[in-house]
Length: 194
Image (cartoon, rainbow, N blue to C red):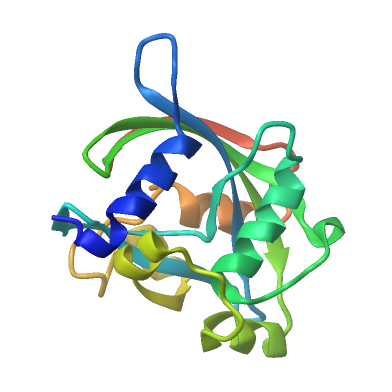
């Protein structure tokens, strides 16, 4: 159950999501696939505030406002969640577009996401997990448990993740193909998980 301290922030979260024509809360989102010089992916571990056993790994990112450019939203979210500030021009892609449906914060939600890739220097990679200059909301403070660099093989096969899924499930494969130059257009998926 979400703590009393986050009930007001839960109401703020609800304002980000507007009911779609079918009544399901919906928002647009932008995410960053940050890759370090060892080709590891930066992922966050989170859980549902109402169900701590419902956990998953995911990339930094979040909702974007009406009229907000997805690239600008992606770098804003990266800065808020990691403290790392980069120029939107550094983003590659979008490399992945996902229509997702998942259960979070008491109900099923739908989110259209664009994922952008950025290659970080060693110093930027250290900054991204240092936990400094972040701007987490109260809900993020409650539901985000960890942030770390994970090897692409681990992201793809889940070894060592204690059966905690990575979303989207194709993240490792898409990232590997993009880094190898095997694709130049975004992969598009529909995902009803999490």
